[in-house]
Image (tube, rainbow over all chains, first blue to last red; front, side):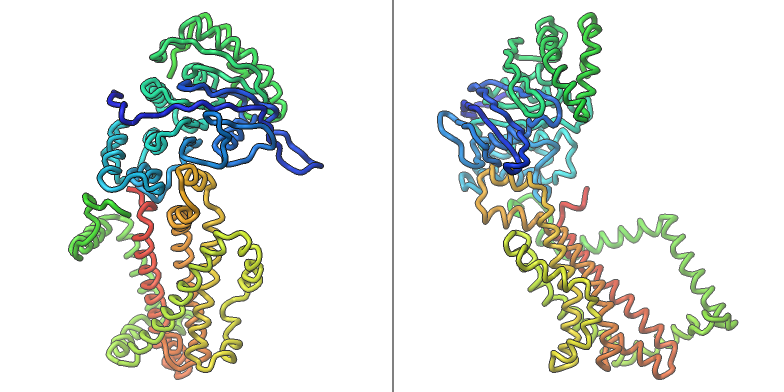
Length: 296
Length: 279
């Protein structure tokens, strides 16, 4: 399904996040959102940040993408400190951030066009190549509202990919999709990643999704957001949903759930909605191990 | 916007539009809802005729539809009637277009520039609640001719609505669009022309449609007060001269004129915002 990727050539970068602190408010009334977060986005690896809803995951992406300045700490991309947003670090946003007034084609062409890197036939070919890759060549002249949720996410993926970013940030990209589309997109995305081997940062509040996708799993604490633990996920690639029944997967899930349980309790006490999901998953853990739930 | 090689939307004559129009008419005519609407209008007219013929209190004072139609048949042969249309239309569109020429760029500027908005917007907040009609006496004093003062009042009616809608449209743009555009390498110029402007277009169209409605309300009243031409005056003259059927002819003409102007705005607006039309 996905072949001929060579000329979409992604150059994978390495990103170092060093003692990141982000606070909001004034001296008198300060809210610490990120507290001393350090982790590395290794070259060609898929790093997943998982933590309860509202723990500050999106703030990490906002800082890494350059939309917000950190209060202190450094963010380095291939050894250089980042300054502001740029096409070397692209975000696939929650829900969709495709420009509603542009067609699929125009959305994908936007980046190279404003940077004046390609035009005319070269640009058209590059865009169509990527649209074919994700099976959307017949939808080139449709507006985002005319696409299904899954199509919108695929368009957004190629809108980023055409710019050859060194790092891609996925900010809960599959949130809001129905369960079926969601699992299809997970499978699709994991395959795209395995072909490309770009450096990816994926944010989610769903542990199962996180483990299924990850090379490295960063578990975050809640309010303020700290790194609780970094786990390596050595499940074999290429991956499909059958790994979710393997004992390695379940061991990782068990360990992660124990860590997250504590955070979920805190989150629950402070009123976050998703915490309830974690607590429920935690209480079902025994059954899970006896009889692995089939996905979808 | 570009790359129209394969899309068939440009450079064709009126034929496809006409076909569309006929197709829509046919579709309407075949729906029960359409005929129910027609039946209701016919019933209303019959009821009205009945009331007028039998001098039912209050409503019986209104001229009967048959009288109105007879009066209309006379009116449409008179140059004066069509001059009234022309005069009102010219006032409306002059005021309206000036309001767009000044209002759209000003709205975009205020929307895109925080400092300018913080400085100038309070003035708008103070002026806005004043109904445009309350400006009539002042503008008659200000402007050398009645014509200019009416155009000015018409202008005001559309101006505030348009500016406020654009500012509202721009300030409520989803921040993610702007962030995505910056990430993809946009300059400030790109952001303005390719994000802020198209993102605010739906608000511009809404502002224009609402503004057009206000404009008609204003011009009709202004014509009754300040001049002796136009559809508003035609209606008023009917009252003063005791020719009551003309009042109704005037009212209906104003309604029709207002509807046509709004339809024109909606049509042009839809052309500029094709993404709002799903499928």
